[in-house]
Image 1: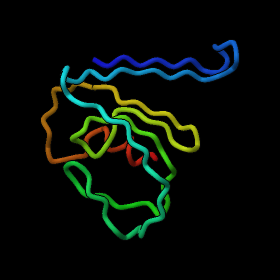
Image 2 (image 1 turned 180 degrees about the horizontal axis):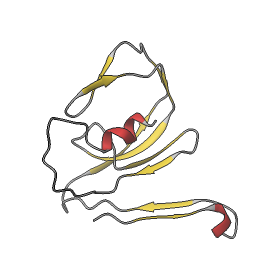
Image 3 (image 1 turned 30 degrees about the vertical axis):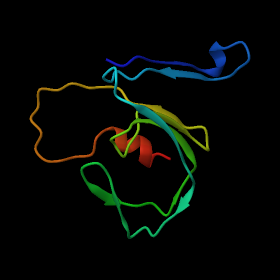
Length: 111
C-alpha cells in the first residue's frame, strides 16, 4: 500500500506545509512528472480519459503531476492554487458494475 504524510503549518518550525507520498508500482514501471498548463475549454466538449469520457470544465489551473506513464490521471500532484493531492488504494469486495474512472482521474481533473 502507498504511504502518505502531511505536516500542516502548525506542525513545522517555519510554518510551511510538507506533503510526501510514495507510489507502490512495479519496480520497472516508469513514473513521469508532467506540467499541465492552464486551459480554457469548450465546456460542451468531452475529455477522453483512460476508460471513459467526461464533461470538461471551462477553465483549469496549471498543475505539476506525477503519474504512471500509461494513464491519463496521476498518482499525486499540486496545482497553481496550492492544492496538493495524492492517491491511496482502497480495497473492496464489491463487484464492479460498469467501467468507471480510475481514482487517478480525479487528480488530473483537479488541476
